[in-house]
Each structure stands twice: as structure tokens, then as C-alpha cells.
Amino acid sequence: VLEIQTTTGNTKAMNKYIARFCQSRQLRLDVHEGNLYVTKGNAALYPCIVAHTDTVHDIVDSFKIYNNDGMYYAMDTERVKQVGTGGDDKVGVYLALKLIDKYDHIKAVFFRDEGSGCEGSKLAQMNFFDCCAFVMQADRNGRKDVISEDWSNALYSDAFSKHIAPIVKK
Image (cartoon, rainbow, N blue to C red):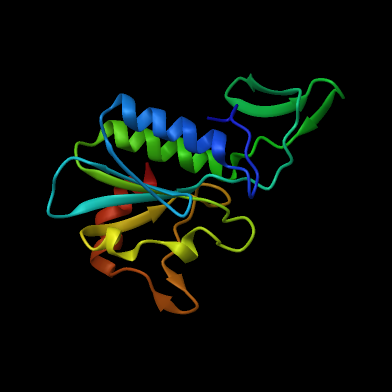
């Protein structure tokens, strides 16, 4: 996933990768306004994961990802210069795809063009979320926090917080 370059306004390569992933697993994939909506299995309630397919980095012709003992970085091999990996939000895309593989019943949405002001999520098909128990997005800076409120509005209950605590800790 890190090897697929995208930028705001140019997410076709990632969308194609996700579409092939869904096709190979016979998942339901709906595309609307450049956003991808994935459903796996049949359930009354689904967990749902959200990611975005764009990054804020320029596309580099001689782009290469390197792994140094679990630390990933990208280089422009022609200019011999480090460039951004696009981890925001390719890490979210990777996590969503891993969770789709892991669970029998799950939904996922891959929004386009979030780096330019949430352009994809503004066009969200809200009825897709009607049967979702919760929606999670892993687009965070770091790994030690979970957003529980937005502008002083609680995003979930104390009971839900206690329920997810072991997952968050892990």
C-alpha cells in the first residue's frame, strides 16, 4: 500500500488497488463520487472503518519505499532525497484492508480528497452507516490516543470506552 502514490485529486491508483482487493475476495463494492464503500458479510450491525485514499505528498517518478527494521521511509532515488511515504492515510488504508480480511462482517469506506478539506466525506452516502454499530478512523498522529470528543461533544459512551479499552491498549 505504501508503494502506491496518490495525492489530493489523483487517487485512481489506490482506488484501483482497493477495487482489485475487493474483487479478489468477492466483496460488495459501491463507488459514489469517487468514494469506495465496501461491505463484507451479512449482519444486522457492522463495525465500520474509514480511511482516505489521498495524501499531501507530490507524486515522484523515482519513488521507492525502504524498510529499515520496521521503520518505513521513502526516497526519490533519482534526486537521492527523502520524500514523504504518504502514511497519512495509507496506514489507514492498510489497516482497513487488514480488518476486512480478519472479520466476517465489516464495512469500510475509503474517502477521496480529504487532504483538501474533507471533499470526499462531504459527499458521503450517509445511509451506508445506518447499520453500523460504530465508525472508526485510524487517521491519528501517534498511537497512544483515541479521540473521545469533538468540540466538547462526546463521540461515544463510557460503556463503549470501557469495551474498547483492551483493544486501544493493545
